[in-house]
Length: 150
Image (tube, rainbow, N blue to C red; front, top):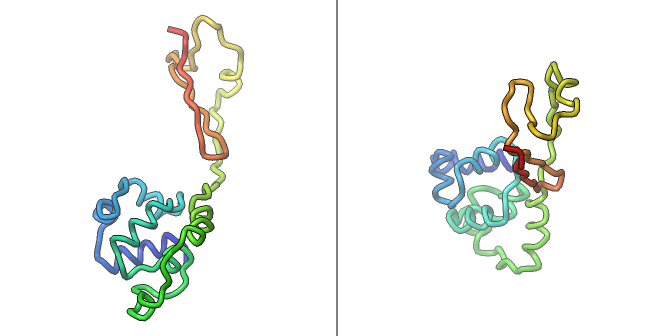
């Protein structure tokens, strides 16, 4: 069972909408949407907030799908307290970026876009000025560059 499936099971069990759940665990509503679609993996902060708000959820079930949900009283009482050394491997695993290849469709006039453009005025094919370029890197970071041409 994938994380998104477990999250759906949690929402159904408590009869919560995604937006109500987001409010309870103190995250943006769009974050829940991305988690449910499988686009993103949960952050450590998200996991810890879920565990704090919903005591019937265990860390191993939420992250790895091991055990049962809702947890039995036995499972809750015999779970050892979490230590920092136990959290670190889980943190590294759940914070790995999800890499999905998205096919890119080149515009029909791609060759025109690639031609050198005058340094005085940079425009696309519709005559609009380029004001900002954002570069996304494979490590999940990005940089934003503003145009210096009026």
